Length: 346
Ligand code: ADP
Image 1 (spheres, rainbow, N blue to C red):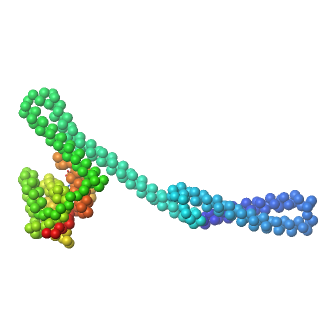
Image 2 (image 1 turned 60 degrees about the horizontal axis):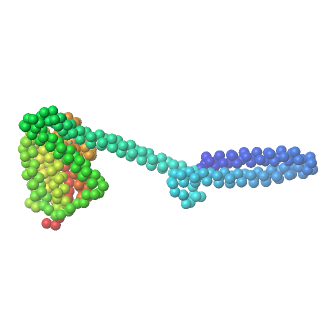
Image 3 (image 1 turned 90 degrees about the vertical axis):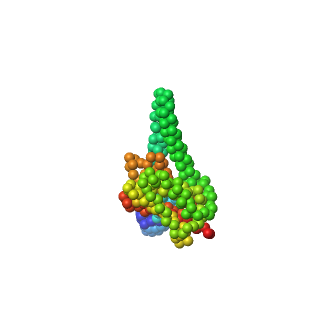
């Protein structure tokens, strides 16, 4: 028992004991004349007083303690939801510890729930925002066609193509979201094989050449060896590279944008980096770019067609490979993404 309770227990027992002894003495005084001789009376009062005092004190202390322990046990069981085995070990100090542990735990739980709620709201807001843009444009084109635009064959074809593009965009967003959900629920299985990462990089560069030309960007590949065999899911690594390279092209702002892709062997692994000299990312938002729909720049500068899910998918694919995506960036100077893959026997 803690000191405070012991003091309380002592004083309560003492006062009640004194009260009982006083009642006893009064009772004896009433009976004095009829029962006792004068000299006997003081002797009886003293002896009975001491006996009743000791007995009632011991009994009261015992009763208070038992009651307190029962209450502690009851509260403790309510907190832990499990009957505590060693009942005699419980005291107020331990109960206090338990309550403060519970308070700490529930505070953390409340904080997590608040963060999740914030995230959920932000997430739903972002999904509807992303969906709204293509939906509005589909709605606009369709109503123009209904209002007579369909008669003009040129307008009809032009608008149908635009509608098709917006539908494709909606489809991409839904597909990306579906993929992220599958990664998060562990539904996606990797199809691991051995392949040359350099060949895959070349394929990506070839596919992105037109995009790069449009932005006047130059893509360079630096290979430390002609062949670097890795063990990974080829199709998914292709997706990562496409994402990183297309971001590097899109977020370039220089007259002469330069993108360098490097592959090299580092500590028994194969390290791949995609570096650009583009707009860079502010340090305070850098940790957030892998969140779904997060965009470092204001909506005015938002990339048309990008779902804001690319890096979230990159992160998930690498996590499925037990790897991590790393990023270094200097605002207005450039960004470097890197990741490693297991080496395969060449
Ligand atoms: P999206 O490009 O569709 O917006 P991503 O998930 O690919 O979505 O990227 C998230 C955000 O990270 C981008 O909106 C952009 O602000 C930032 N970002 C990604 N790659 C780069 C890069 N190479 N340079 C500068 N910013 C980048």
